[in-house]
Structure formats: structure tokens, C-alpha cells
Image (cartoon, rainbow, N blue to C red):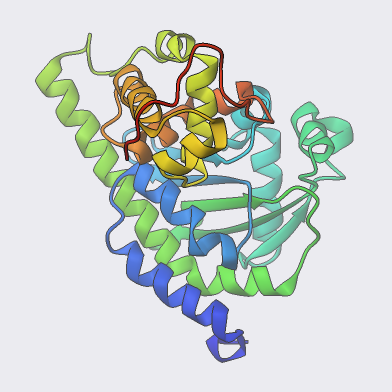
Length: 287
């Protein structure tokens, strides 16, 4: 199979994805890049993206989830040495290091995290990776995609195989940029401030209403659209978002969503957003 075998809309999505990849340099940009055309090509609700880190001589992972997941499951996907990730890697190796759908059923009776993933609907996970130059037994990047309730399909696997070079290059760029900026921050601010925002304190300071608004921001809704959904003014929404950015230490909405995901804030989000809260008025509009 080749790009000629793709439906026209998938071919167009792939072209947009490749073009947009050149602008992706930060972690929050990578998250949004995977939530656009990538979702049309390789549908997923959770992804684990790992890159080899020379500093620790191992793969370090970012887990990106657009739906709430228990912390222990997120942890298992972010650790290359967890039974789940070891199983995924082993199965990928057995498939001659080709894109693979991996079934967690066999591992589930022996590992709580694998069992939890199966119970959440992630029985099948789509995997692919790239080995280090000249070291075929060592990974340079490794990617895992999961969609609740999905079954293996050749099209998703074929598309992931086609976009893998761009996924690999883009995530390596993000990994290097974040590592350089982290080192720069450590040098400029000192060890006490190198970690940035105090995550537990920031997470605790986010109110239920702010989580609710963050949920709609994650869906790509504008201030006006959120205001209409919640029955409050667009100016009120804007004020809430400014408070969220300040609390999370985020520069923009995309970065706020990425940071909220890393704190697992969406697991506390109300499933059905409430309408106008008592005491909130619809007096002004804003964007």
C-alpha cells in the first residue's frame, strides 16, 4: 500500500499534517498537532510518545490524553520499563519492528495496569518506533496510540507507517527544544525555581468552573461559544481563562490545556457542563 491507496480526504489530511509539523517545536504545540488532522488519520484518545534522552540514557515519555484516565494507567504508559510498555516493545520487535496492533489480553491476568487498560477499553494499542542509528536494538523514539473500544484495522496501521518519519522528526525536535529550554531555565533561575509552577498547588487552585471552561477550551471552542454553552458572558469566560493562565503559568490557551493534561485536571471535570451559575450575569460580551 502507498499514499495512492488513501481516500482523497485522508491524503489531504496527511499533506496538512506534514506541512504543519514544521511549525511544531514545543510540547503544547505537539499536543494540538496530534489533535487535528492526526485524529482523522489515526483516531486516538491517549498517546504515549517517547524519545531517547542522552542525559538519562533511556526513553522519556509524554503521555497525552484527551479523556480522563487513572493516574496508575498514565504512569504505566510513561515508563518504558513498566510491564505494559515492555510487552508493547516486545511485540513490536516480534513483528520485525513494523507498525503493530498489540493485544493486552494475555498480559492482563498478570499485570494490574494492563487489566485496567483493558477495562477502560484499551485492549488493542497501535505501536511503532524508530531505532537509534547504527543500534538496531535501541529505540530512538517509540509511539503508542489508544482508542477506547477500537479493533485492529489495516488503514490506521498503514497511515501510521506513512506518517512515522514526520512523527519521529517532529517529536525529536520537541524533545530537544524542551530539554534545551529546561536547561536554560535551570541556569537562569536556579534550582529552586527550575521546576516552574508548583503543580499540586496549581491544580488545587483551579476551581470547578475553571475546569469546566478548560474542558471547552480543549475542544477548541471560542470564548463566545463557551459563553453561550454555559449561559455566562464572553467577558466572564475571558476573565476565567486569564485566571487559569495565571494559575497554571501558561502563556496561552494551548499551553494551558497541555499543562492541565499533565496534571490530570480533566479527570475532575464535570461530564455535563452546568449552565449559568448563581450570581453570574450576562451583562457584557467579549472575545
